[in-house]
Amino acid sequence: MAELLGLNDHQIISNIERGERKVSSDELINLMRILDKPLEYFTDPFLITQEKVFSWRVNSEAILPAEYEEKAKKLIAAYREFSRMIGHRISALSQKMQITKQSTYEEVEDIAEFLVEEWKLSDIPYDNLRKVLEENLHIPVLYVDAPKNISGASCKLDNLNCILINRNEPVGRQSFNLAHELFHLLTWDVYPPKRIDQAQIEPKPKEEKLADKFASVLLMPKKSISNYFNSLDPEEDLLKRLEKVANHFHVSVSAAYWRLFILNLVQRVDDKYYKKEIECHSVDTDIKPPLYSESFVKILHDVIHKGMASIRKVTSLLECSQNDLESLFKSYELKGLYE
Image 1 (cartoon, rainbow, N blue to C red):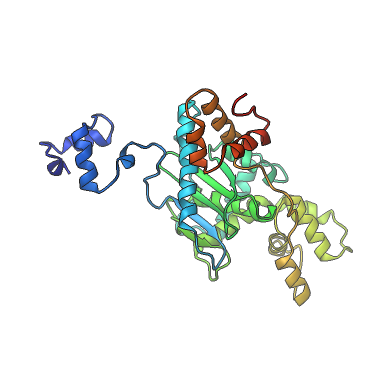
Image 2 (image 1 turned 30 degrees about the vertical axis):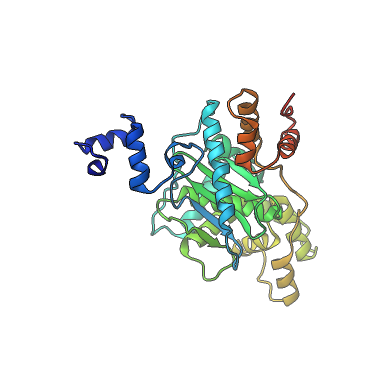
């Protein structure tokens, strides 16, 4: 690279990479030519140039729309850059789970049970999980209007971890996807996830099985689910009791059944009717969280009202209209664009 740029010392390249030496306009033009990249690649802070930063959770036969990944990149880049503008701290510490390639499912279960206590997630962990991720782990959770074949994604950048959740899915899917993607972020170095995680495909690779196990235990800790299930009327129809457990812990009926079965609190269901009902039945389908997150929308609001970014820039990054942005602010009870 030093030779291509006409530099005498390769150490200069290291200094440029570390930000200790500026690049001249001539050198920048040469870099564009040598690397075959546009000017924006070097100068636009709203571009994500890292590779392999997403792990998408999709339906078994779904194809990820390439244009949606680009939209997601702009959204996360907007969070990163606007946060920097207003001095909103993005943690430089990367949380990691202490596991290895040899770790067992039981070890992952133990870690999940420990984290419920460590993070003080209460008897219904999902109620507090998002708050813990955003405030303690500095992992923003953005609820988005993704294509229906996409459930969510984890995104790992050098200086930011992020989770995307499709807010149009049933709450049971939302909660499980949140905990599942959290596992990927905490174990990215040991088990780098695939770019496309086909949720329904069998057989699943070990890292996906571990992520499912982690999510199940984190959302339904042994003590909490045992106490709640045992408090229900044992004479009541099993499906009704499973619905109550699913509603209580904000999970799917199927997830509730398998967790209870593993804990020997229910017997295996062999009846075809029950199997079908358990697998297909969902609850709380009308719960739809507001778009993005309160912290992110407040950041957008601040950069506009403090004159740090134009309305046009924000609407371009979010791929929305001014009316959409007004509605977004209103949904979080923030003043409008021109107030």
